[in-house]
Structure formats: structure tokens, C-alpha cells
Image 1: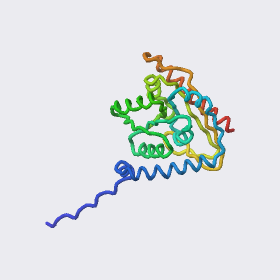
Image 2: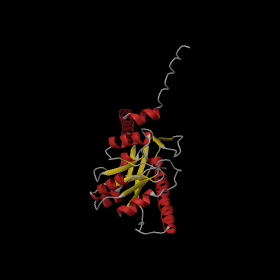
Image 3: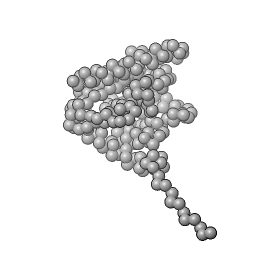
Image 4: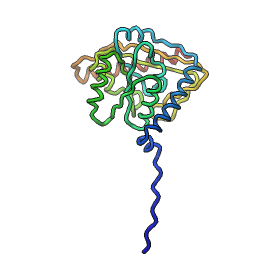
Amino acid sequence: MGAMPDTPSPRPTLRQRLEQSDLLAGGLGRLLAGWLRFCQATTRWDRDDAALRAALAGGPVVLVLWHECSLMGPVHWPRDAAPLSSLRDTSPIGRVSGAVQARLGLAPMAMAARASNRAASREVLRRMQAGVSLGLTGDGPLGPVRRLKDAPLDWARASGAPVFVYACAMTRARRLRTWDRMLWPMPFGRGVCLYRRWDATVPRRADAASLDALRADLAATLDIAMQEAQTRLD
């Protein structure tokens, strides 16, 4: 019998190419960062960050936002007031997100969802001790949408830093068909971005009931801030 012809290898998917190529992830990140800067520059923004700036004068903060606002969050952070180190997932989309954040002047840190992150956690705390704030999504990277996870409370407890929430709304934006209904900005509109301090602290030792109450309160603070941004826009 003759030799069987070689079966052509399937072409790698975009996910596989992103996993294998820093160049591709960086290129997509560069394009997306450029779009975000363009939308930022062509939108008339009502910014409310005085309380955040006042707090940053005394040291770093933990910044929490819903995943749906994670595109504009890095754009609005007041980099002239303090640096921000953001947490990102290790997935292909997380790699692109990290490239965007780096392009926008942040210092992203990779955190795996199902692995030990002890070294990365120590580095985050070291940065915070040096005055670098920490930003993370409350319901990311996979949701459910607006369901607050433990990470914001864990970081608030570990660092002892005050917690702020971020919210934004835009007249020209689209909602993507993603699990979080991501807010995709469009140019030439009006927008509101605001920061609100969470008036609670996470004690070093707290029982499950106390943590549940704190989690619900922080989630409510995020929802109220989102509603306030939309109301001010209307």
C-alpha cells in the first residue's frame, strides 16, 4: 500500500495565536488603546475625582469597578496623582487587556484564576507599600455579571488601604453581547466618570456572615455609583 497523504494541520485559532504570540497580543492592545484614547479625547467628560485625589495624597487605594466598565477605567485613572497597578487574568483576552492597560500607563499584574498567586500577591503588596494603588474588577474575569467576588475584600483586608469604586456612563456607547454586556465607547458624545469611597473597612478577622454583609454593601456601592453616573448623564 502506498503511503497515506499527510493530513494538513488545522489552522490555529485566534485564542491559540494569542496564547503563543506576545507580538499579536501587543498589536491588538495597541489598536484598542488608540481607540480608547480617541474616544476619550472626543467625548465631553464630567469628571468627579476630587475625593479620590485627596485620598491618594495620603497613600494608595484599592479601586474596584464592574467588569462592564473595564475599558474606560484605565483611561480615567488620574495618573498625575498616583500610579495604579491593575490585575488581569492570564487568559488570551486577559493578555490583550494587559497590553491595553500598559499602553495607557498602568502596571498590569497577571493573576491566574485557578492557581497559586503567592509571588504575584507579594509583588502587589510590595508595590502598594511603595505607594502604588491597586485596581481590579469586582465581578471579573468571568462573572456572573455584577456578582461581587471575594478578591476586593481580600485585598482591602491585606493592604489596609481605603476602597474606592469607579463608574462611568456615556451617551455614545454600545453594549457588547458578552457576559458582562461590556460598555464599548464611541466618539463625539458626552460622558460621566466618578469615584466614590466605600465607607467600610474589612477587619483582619471576620466571620462568614460579616464578610457576606460587607460583600453585599460593596456591591451596592458599585451599583449606586453606576446609577449616579447614568442619572448625571441624563
